[in-house]
Image: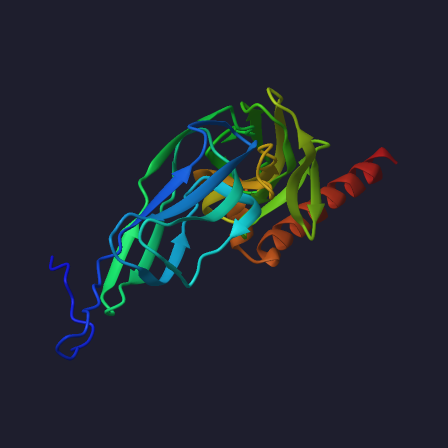
Amino acid sequence: RNDIHISEIIKYGDDPKFIGSPDIKITKETDETVEIGEPFRVTVRAENVGDGKAVDLEFTDNHGQGLSIEDTILEDKGPMSLDAGDSKTILIYELKATQPGEVELGTTTARYYDEAGNRFDSESDELILDVEGTLQKADVSISHTVESKNIERNSRLDGTISLRNDGNTAAKGLRVDIELPPGVEFVSGDDEIETRGGNPSIYIESFSQRQQIDVSYTVRPTDIGEYNIGANLSYEYDDGFSDTPEEVNKEATVEGITVIEAWYDFLLEYPLYVYAVPLVIIGGIGLFIIHRQKQYKF
């Protein structure tokens, strides 16, 4: 790179004006090991280690993933100028780690020009933070079973939804919506089940860690066919550090429930009079026999 640039043409005998090249070195300082959820301070400094003045100097800062801003103490991102050999503190702020393990602290970049109008760019080194601690998490598993996948129409079918929290904190506002397809009616369920508009659901305000429960329900299929019964689980929990609760959605569907004709279904295939006429005749014969028996007694 040519470090000598023409700024202006001078008359013979005048002293030439030397224009060097600026070189901005950006340094980010913070602790290498931090506690999850605990604020820590980051200081960003800029130093012109070149031999020319930097003008129109502007900075852009990136905090990085898994980190949230807590407080800004100093912010001077420019535009500014910085003479060769000078240094300046441009940013001081506090961050909070929201996930454990190794977290990359984002870089700070600079864009600037020399006095001849040539553009330069600089970037700070990457820093890896060791974040210690454990996030709280509610981990609720769901299983869904029915007693049989082959039943007759209008028979009762019992189902069971099992829930277990394997996490280290409670699940809040836990809800399971039981999705019944057309042709399947809800009959009854355990106390944890409530119905709104005919749709059954389970609601538990707080589901503690290591808690488990089995909830049973009964339905009746009214139409022949193949059906699926779904169970959609939703809940949220506080991880102890984030500003908003974490939301979780899961589902457990019983597929391939086959509903066949009941043994008496063939009776419904004919009009009522087909059965009524023979019954009337049989009833009439019976009454006639009874009447004749009474006559013979006298």
